[in-house]
Length: 140
Image (cartoon, rainbow, N blue to C red; front, side):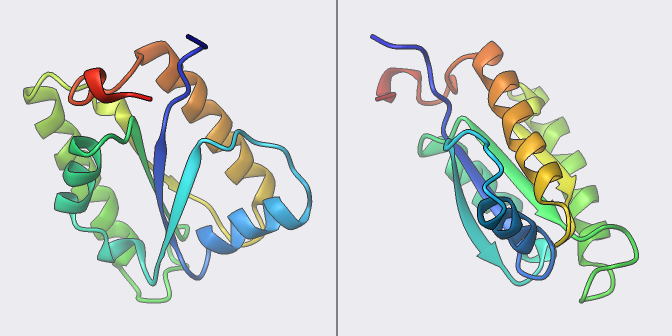
């Protein structure tokens, strides 16, 4: 059995973070292939229920990435998301799930290197945490 490779689900804002991830790819910036991205129009559209369901179904970590403060195309979606993630992390702590499994980051369209660094750091952190305790027996 090889080293544990975490599965990360990324919810990326269409206008900034998804474009930042695309820039990382087109610039050939290397980062771990552990992330599967879902493009959302705004990080504010990410319901905490989606995150809980993804954790329950086998994701080891969830990355939600949005526009920097003041740059949201929908004015306040990124602020709402940051507050929701903070509350969700408190709930996860109450459920004895490491709140570090859910991460919120600001990544702009011009920050391909930052996106790569965020994913690389998140993979390293998740490797230290080990498999998601909700799905530990079901890991491939």
